[in-house]
Structure formats: C-alpha cells, structure tokens
Length: 284
Image (cartoon, rainbow, N blue to C red):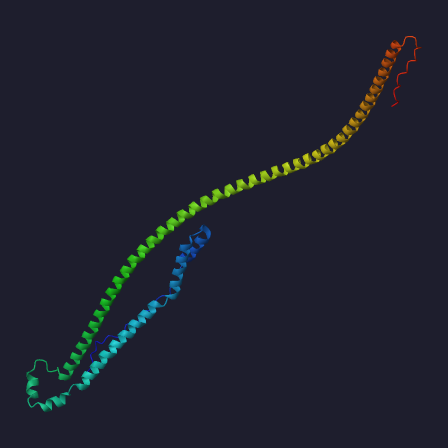
C-alpha cells in the first residue's frame, strides 16, 4: 500500500512578463534633452538589452525546479513500488510461521505487516534522499548567495570607480569647453585682426600704385628736363665759343695796332700807314 502523503508537484507560477518601464524611455528622453554623458547612455542600453534577453529566465528556472522535483518523486515512487513488490504477502508469512496467530495476537500493533514496514523503510529512505538533496541545494544556494554578494561588492566598487571616472570626465569636459570657448574668442579676434591687416594692405597697395604712377610721371619730367638742360647747355657753349672767338679776334687786332705804332715810332719820316679797322663782330 502506497502512502497517501506523497506531495504533489508544486504549481509553477508563471512569472510576470517584464516590460520596459517608462524609466528607460524617460532616461533616454533626458539624454536627448539635457545631453546625458555617453557612458550613461551605454549603461541604459545594456540594461534594456538584459531586460529583453532575460525576461524568461524566471520561467526557465521554475521549470528546471519542477523537472528536478518530478525526477525525485519518480525515484521515490519507484523505490516504494520495488519495496512493495519484494515484501512477502500476509498469507505466506502466516503459513511459514506456525506461531503466527499467537505472535500476531501478542503484538501490540497487529495491523503492522512486514510489507508495510518495508514500504515505510523505502519511504524513509526516499525522504532521507530528498532531504540530502534539499541540503545540497541549500548549500548550493548559500554558495551562490556568497558569490552574488562578492559580485555585488565588486560591482559596487566598479560602479563607484565608474562614477569617479565619469565625474573626472565631466570636469575635463567642462574644462575643455571653457578652453574651446577661449580659443574660439581668440580665433574671432585673430580673424578680425587679419581682416584689418588685409584692409591696411589693400590701402598700402593703392597708395603704392599711386606713388608708382607719380614716380613714372616724375621720371618722364626728369627726362624732359635733362633734354632741355642739354639743349640749353649746348646753346650756352655755342655762345661762349662765339664770344671767345670775337675776343681772340679783338686781341689779334690790338696786337697789330700796337705793332704798327711801334714801327711808326721807329720810322719818323715815313708816312703813317692807315690804321686797320677793328674786326667786325660776326652776325649771330
């Protein structure tokens, strides 16, 4: 006879389907509106991926527990059936023992038979195996809990390091933004200065072109003046040569007059020759 306290398989409660809450969408909206940092956006996307990929893990775990419990129940029932099949029947036990009636009357619990004792022993053995299995499972759970606690500590430490790194990156980004603003203002100032210098260069080029034109005009005027000076110098030289010629002719006439006077003084009785006429100036 099988015991009536065999536990039925536990009803597996279907886990609620995890849904992506509005926190992720709100976080993404905040990222788009307030400029969330890139590492926070990646962290949120990884969380969303984990939620999508692990949404059936609870159901799989429950089915795994159900299969394990069913296997254990099958083993226990098989052990009970084997024990019931191996145990001798009451009629054979009474026929083999001549004092069976007397011993049965003298026993305090006449309803207990060797078959029932064997079934109880098999049931106790099955319960002990189930208890050992549950103890192993509890030990495994404690071990998993310790590992999870260690992982949680490591994750907290990593999260704190990531937060420090994010804070440093934020400070560095703010500093770089300030430097970028300074450099942009300097670039604007340099662009304005370059524009002013370009305008000054254009003005100087215009003045240079004007001065070049004036210089060419002055050089042309100098050439004309050189030609005029050469012409005037030549005319003056010609005039001076003419005057020198007249002076030479006058000198020669005076020498002739002096010589005639000396000759006339030397010869008193001779008649006086007529004085030569002074040379007439040549017409210009």
